[in-house]
Length: 468
Image (cartoon, rainbow, N blue to C red):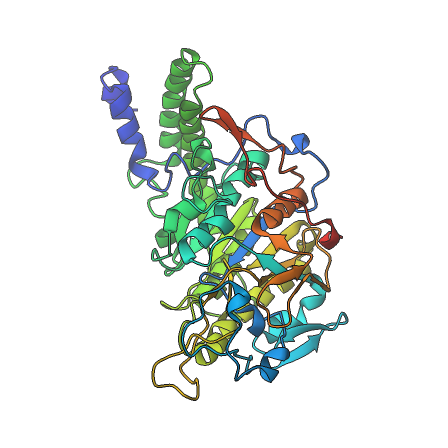
């Protein structure tokens, strides 16, 4: 320890500044997932899923071109949609059948579009929900609803609630990690915010465009001090923190700071190992594909394998999300090809490792896309047409973690316009995810500003029919 420390000259603020040299990764909100009083022995019931990977198809894939075949659209292809749909129908819009074929897949014989052949090959391990619906057909509120259960950026995210309820399985890593190829994600940090939950339940967000470990987890190592020297400094500052905490009973912000600093120190050894996908055999990396999304899915598997509770992987191909307003028939299969390989590889890899039974994988976006065209100008053959946003019916895929495989649940109407049978709202999906993790969504609450809040607010029912 240097002379300034020996002579007692360094004050508390200076000490914190010195300590921060090696902990650039360690924001107070991002690195500690252990929920006080909410360890695994406090589950409301037996958990089927210990961890979750949410493969988020940012922008909204078309349900009628993925998991929900609608042959009636061919019969009505030259007809304008009925104004009674409740949607604003653009001039020139017509019912738009999928140009891609659906095929019976797996022993269950579930219809999956030919643009997703690898997921089709894994369908016996998956449940497809064809009756999803949400509140608003605009990206920002729909993204917020799917990620936080509210259409405004004021609530904690699904991942933050999960870690608040269960903690992390590895105190050397964050409990909740977000992987995204670009900072240009619509809405952005509000989608993985802890909001009013204590700061340690904020996600650690990682940009995955460069998979070099020192780029993924910047400044995780102190450039000046050895680990033993850092350990002495951490011990000193933590002792000071605890003396400070004794005078401030139940100060959650201070407790979050103490825990985050300790985790930041421990991450120096663990993060470099967990985040390094180059340690994977080449055949495994080839399985996922050498793309931003493929590498992110492989990293997600490594993180949950090492004890991270919740990982969100946001899909963007270059600058192209699933927002196919124009040239849908051209762009949709390109997006599918990239997502399909990595998504199926993740499910297969987890299964091969014996992890799929207690890892829940979710695939889907914030809404679907219209069964009718979004017409382009001077395009009589509809070659440039796209599909607009669609909130009243869409599909989600779930695999592992206590979900029935080989099941197609719920239906939309003959055009894919509205969910009609066994309707599943986003609140119901959230309630079911928490249930699979051993949490009663009505009992996981946090008191804030004079009332008890929960992820599903006053809504949500567990979809028991899809549970194994």
